[in-house]
Image (cartoon, rainbow over all chains, first blue to last red; front, side):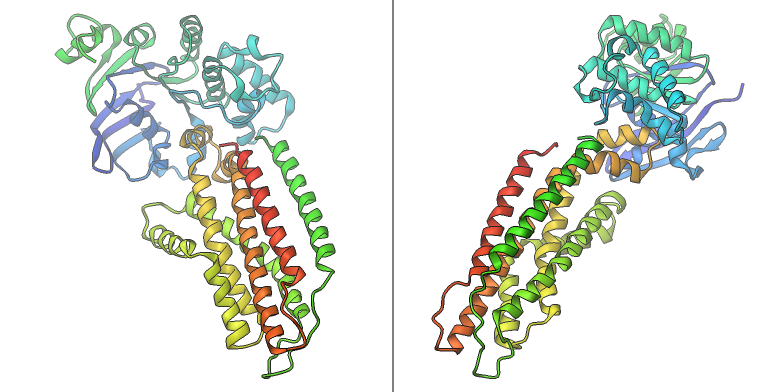
Length: 251
Length: 242
């Protein structure tokens, strides 16, 4: 099986602080890869390296290679096109200062879609996938920033889906969403897996257990273990600290 | 603030500028003195000559403000903050912005009224350059830096290009604060222009004993305008969207 993403000896530092210490892992196509680990273990940094949004931080040093479909992402000249291929949902909802409709239509318009009917269809589909359509369908012209925290988070998910990415990076997507809505979005993710590869960073280990085909455990910038989710959550993962973390003995 | 609000703000500002311009012309039409300087080979004939030069400075002032905004956006959006170019430019701007505008005004008055006794666009432009550019760049930079990185990241993560992010997110978010900086700068320029006219008026009356020194009407108009611009800048500061 060809890997969708190949990461080799990835090292990232913020000035003097080492965030990732030479990580290597592969992500298969159409799988959900759960990435778990305590705070400061480098999970978010890993996602930001993959879609090259880490470049906005000052004083970053990145070594190693990240390949998407066998192509080094740093050799891709059209970084904007790369970011459209790799969608990203950030931990806290960031409503762009636009209407709900324009928030979701932002990426398709950026990609050059001008047909109103086509954009309408994308907006409705993405809002439905993000379990938000029923709540906002009558006020699409309202500002996205006026929605509640949970609704804004679902709006960011809808936005990330709007450009139909090949890879979807979800960074703590359910942090501001209630449990019932989380379950609805999780159902959507299980369906979306057929269309795209999903990287799911979560602090909720049970969420990784529910959703992920494989799970990676990170600690202090190191990849401790990556394996089938059933193995990681069994009584016999390869590393003792993995067992301790998923069973709540630390973290 | 979305694009339509931005458009409304721009229209409001244009109307405001027209009203101010009309007010200024009306008030300035009551000229103070046409007295010629008769002794000492002074080339400055009348205060109206000075007014002509000052009116001529308005487009230069506008160009300098636009230049400053462009530099500020270039520094914050394109140039790496860790590059040596950024650090040097940043340091130079900081130094010049810290010097009170009064110093530049006195520099201008010294060269025109005392030293060369000739008005030149070059001297005026240099003075206005140092009053306008460093302060406008610095205030604009500070406003741009306040735009949350997460907003940029969210837009870039959707594949938006830099110009799109600036046009759709940075400018709408920073527009009121940028206007505050611009109006504050204009206010300073007007106050310095008033000072300049007062010094010139005093110099003329000193050379010509027929006139007793009085503060020229135009200086009062300029000072009133400066005050008005300060008030407007405060209003925009309250309207800030950050």
